[in-house]
Structure formats: C-alpha cells, structure tokens
Image (cartoon, rainbow, N blue to C red; front, side, top):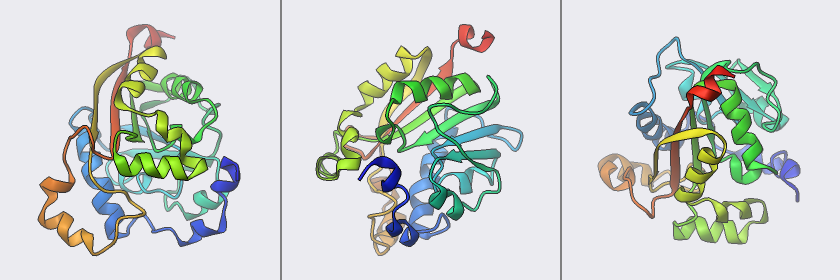
Length: 225
C-alpha cells in the first residue's frame, strides 16, 4: 500500500474524532508546550500542514486563526475546521510569509521528500516553524515503524535528525526535545483516568518519550526573501 492509499483507506472512518477525550488529553498538553516558545493569540495566523482529520487543527482553531492543508480527501471530510484545503505539502499554494506559525504533526515520515516539505513550511512562515514527529528512540515507536511499511520512515526521526533537518533548510532551532508518553489512536480510553491522575508521568520530557519536538525560527535572511 502506498502513502496515498494508506491515508484514503476505509479503516480511517473509525478513527477517533478530534473532540474524543483521549485526543484532547494527547493534544492539549502538546499545544501548551508549543506556547512556551511561540505566542499564540486570536490574531496569530497558523497553518497546520498535514492536518488530517483535525486532531490539532480543532484545538488551534480555538486559540488562533488556524488553517489546515492535507492531500487526503477522506481525512479532510472528517476535519471540523472550516478553513482547510486539499494541498500537497511539497508545494504549498500560499504566498511567502503568509502565516505567523507553520506547524506539522506526524507528517514528515509520510512524505516523499521531507526536506522539501520543511523548505515549503519555512517559505510560507513569517516567524516560526514547529514540527512534531514520532521519536524513533522510543521502543514502541521503533517497533511500530519497523512493522508497518507506511510508517517505516519514522526510523529516521531522532531529535538530532530533526535539528539537522531544520537547520539544513535555513531555520534556527530554538528547542529540540522529546515529550509525552501517549499516542492518540492506540492509547486505551481507560488510561485517560490514569493520565489525569498522574499527568506528570505521561507529560514528561525524556529521551525515550514518544514525540519529538523541534521549535524553529526563520533567520533574518529568509524573512527578507
């Protein structure tokens, strides 16, 4: 199965909706981590690249002027945001510096040319590029990437790899770390109670955490382009 077919398959109809409590428990702490580095206000224009069915778009839209793009028609139909567009991340149909923040979550390990996607994200951003990717240093993520062919490129993405990628494409990495011990689809609902009771155990920064973060800024040279 190629990536296009993978993201149009029938099984996606059974995915959790963005307002599912487990999705909220996964997404909201990560948005709060992003806000430690990036100002998000109702006036902030944010683009969610590879927005899918809206796990992050749904919540960003409550705090800023959020837009989303994805190439999967099936996922976009499930996305509750009204400002979504079908678009290839390798060639974003926006002018340079169109958004204050350009964000992606679990996108780069699914695309043909991650460097080109990062360059496009940088091109359409005025200030920040924020990338979240599964952490291949986590044993469960490593095994999942090893067993599922469409996830296999995830074996590449360590924090140091992401730092090199953004810096190699003209951005300045402000922060790079791994965070969180849950995944949005596979985490059982009953564990939500544990997550609420022991949030410090689930929402931690650790080398074996499940999600890599890189927060990057545009350099003055890129802003002037």
